[in-house]
Length: 620
Image 1 (tube, rainbow, N blue to C red):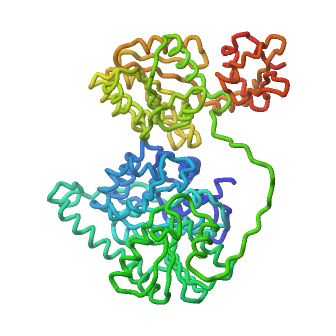
Image 2: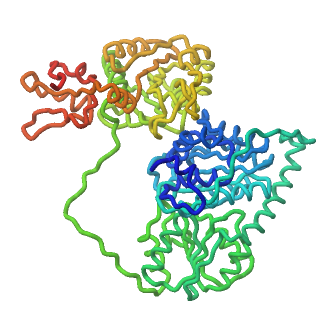
Image 3: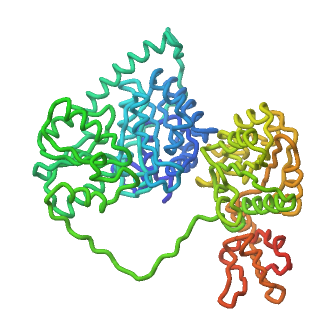
């Protein structure tokens, strides 16, 4: 859609928005002035929209170096009197946790919302953590929207709640809520405030032990006040379809519950919680007194189920509680109407309709993610592998990192052995270098390098590690939608910004062997990688070439698009291009001849250098 409408839409207008787009409109209706993020799926579209609208809206927006920094800049803004909004994917909150925990102690002057987009079923993530637990650890209120309309509405509610109790508010979406699209009814946009002012408090906003002891008591008092609000707020609703069978649910799981209950005419009472922490004890207690059995439907951990069991035990309520802990519902992965339906069937005598599905005998092929045609990472992996082969190195360890290049785990490259988190490849590479006598090659992207790789590099140099670090600089944060990284001369507002040199940064840390190559020049890249692998100590090769999506767009603009084909009279069917290069544009025909699909080929021409028979040429 035209993202300008997210800003210009008037009260009573309706827009068909993604959950993430609705978050932007909700922030604008809430009078947000300051926005920060580090891109991470499933939250990325929020930043994509803000980057286009921020200047017109009068809002400051930045892609921060990492999530910890994003929380810090927005917390400072909220303390200086500006409503602020910071968002990230669920594992991003792990990075931000150190500062996030302290924001609860220090509190805020104006509203601050921290949105965490959780990823049940791990569609684009390395784990399935449930960040509702973070709200309980830190001691901050938690909101859980179920659809785009509620995402938008809870943004304004969250700012007001934050200011009422002077705490940041955590909002938890999930992949399904972030990426579902629905009709959203608009309200008025509140103009942002220009600049704030930091008023120095008598005891200062510094949690030294003497202050932290007092702040801890104040935090608990704020949570008591927040629980009273949760018990009385209209964002927590009861849907009464009769009978003594109850369901307590929240977030995206609520949609599945409603689908099953309505489709099967199940006489049930549903308590839908949107303000879920502090847990509304009195509201839940009253609800439980009206039913004989209750099913807790939530994704991922049994967080609410344990809260309900505590209330049942505390007040000795005669009700049977079912959920994950009773194996009525699964503890892992994203839910669906069928999962909810099967859970209800286990504990009730209600008739459940059998869903009709279209049947087909066609088996869909497995389609794993692959590096794009023309991706410079493929050329980097090919050159490194050739260099290792030339030097006859054995048992090389490949710590890798989070980005498109993680796909180096796949055959034929298989150059990804160990991965913990963003930026971990340098730290783990250092560990392997001291723990083994094997050669170490760590891979890391340019955005990831600035995100969390620098501390690991300082550690590697200081502790005299012996490893090769390959910084795969494709000039963008490609995996999440091509947001700018610090190595680009542009920032989140679209302004010209200083380009942070990776070369100068690593030399300043003390790395002596630093070379930059263009992986499209395979022979030169292979030569440099051979030299780096022979170096004793920390060596860095910056493999620098723009993401294929960037170069494709530039070629199309200049109308210089070309593709390649195979001269069948020269081809010996050696299959190097298919089995060792593995560009998705290559395929084998029925007659075992090799071809290049012109619709997939992006014209990079690197395959010309790969073919030992020089059988690849420009398509005429």
